[in-house]
Length: 396
Image (cartoon, rainbow, N blue to C red):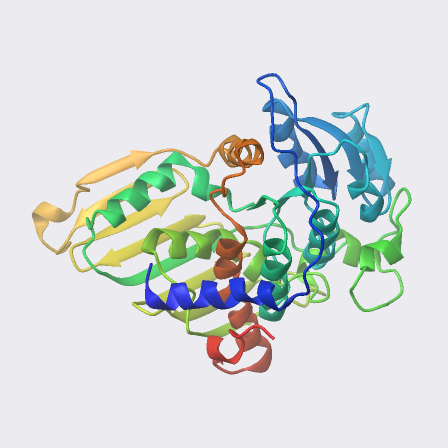
């Protein structure tokens, strides 16, 4: 771990010391071979239902569900018919006999839901991003480290054998010294924002939570990811997966600065850009991040370029090429592996850590480091300037 990474994580971890001491709710520490974990889901939309399936497949029992939309609750109950349902997440975390909580709400609700779960003594699987800002990141780490709870951030590539193998090769020095990293995602999620009346019942005030008050707009509920009040856009939504891989594989700290250009191209009425390009200044190398949500060419793609070789990683696997690639004998990969990103491995790691009380593969500090540069990039985009981590890194 380089000095920048150590300093960043130390700064954010030390914020916990500034909080007043409070009685801790001691988590359950003894487990029998046949004991079954119980869990609740806060946010039972598509993502919450999807991740919950793996909790269930791995032997955990869903006993509580919470959502502000009754149709989401009804859909989730099909796979958890005995679960009790709640409108308010504070009521769910008070559910007796609950071991842990899966938080899969819109981004702006991650922090308050996490605080409530921690205060209730629950372990947490927290979907990314962990925060809406760098300042909130500091408060998030402080809140977690004031407790004894296990918190796993949902960047599941850390648990994928394919990515673990790629990291091992980089750690062994196969690429030499990393000089440049490129991360790209091209996708076609949607092209219009449906603002027709919502079916079912929605508690709009509970959906808004800490966000600014405004009259109900159905499109803001359906497509919350493209509005600044509820999300950092595709930058933090998809960007967390990409830039977490960069930090992890390169053993790097967060970037020192970011510049960003982008615009809304295809999604009329959206606030967050659907086409964007970012340049990050990492301590040891520059990195680029590009999103194009109007084109699917190549989909997900990483290039880790070292002075001795290049690793190209995509949705099918990875390939390693020797330098100089221009030499005819080096045009074919010297190493390649195939594979995907199984979701069950990341959930299994979390459930195992609940019983062992060991740190999961993506603890809260890593989730904070992974989103730090993306928050910088959003600042750079919205303010039209180069945003520097030094402006925000010290917890207040």
